[in-house]
Length: 115
Length: 107
Image (cartoon, rainbow over all chains, first blue to last red; front, side, top):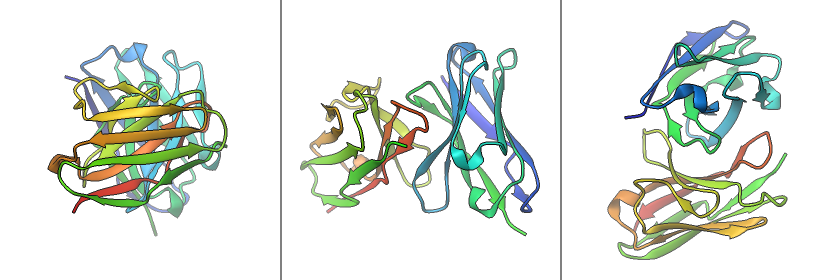
């Protein structure tokens, strides 16, 4: 059974940093590109970033470029999202997803940016 | 960025009714289109990929069609468990972009 389990979400002040993790199991993690998608409260879905299977290629939405870093550890089957200089508009549930068509999703982790 | 215009924003259907949801892309996305269902308080689930390919385990009453800039999701025979929010996603170019969503309810 495929499982994606996010962790690391919490309340953080604007301007601070936070790192999300996503532990994957039930599939060959190293063979799948991975992505983060977020959803602000009562809003729609918003793609954040994607990383290739090797980690050699990364893609970001403009609003997080230069602030967020997606990375992966294939030996640990874990995906990461380092989020720096957080803003109130980054408040959302963050989902870890697998494959180019976002085939598998985690349960999500809530990130609240507020003073 | 490619804009995805999804309609309708909300829809109320009777049990057994056939419904359609549309997504229009601002440019040709070459069938790089997926559909997701999200039930209240849950993660999205992939229903359709590559415009018309049914994800494993998804009931056959769900189908996708379209090409170029126009795509649709059809549910042939609304069931109670089909209530939820539906989103389209274009995967042709980065940034990936979602439609604004359709809230589907039982009438």
